[in-house]
Length: 58
Image (cartoon, rainbow, N blue to C red; front, side, top):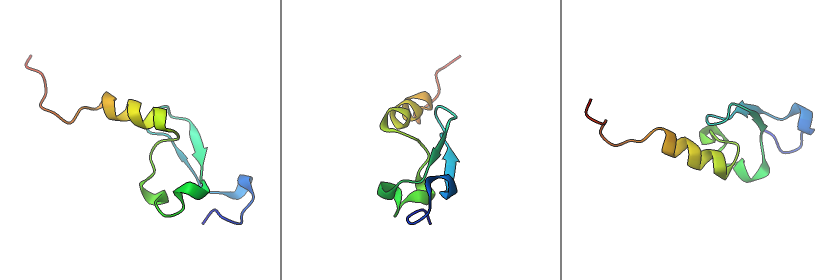
């Protein structure tokens, strides 16, 4: 996938939290298919924005 390619040729995705594009990184090599966020900050924001618990009563 990304390893020996120039940065301009590497795979990229759009962050699920901030909507910005981000590129493949070596640290994501084994789990690239499951990467959804560009940073730990966005990952934390993405998890708090969509709570998995029951919805509030109306």
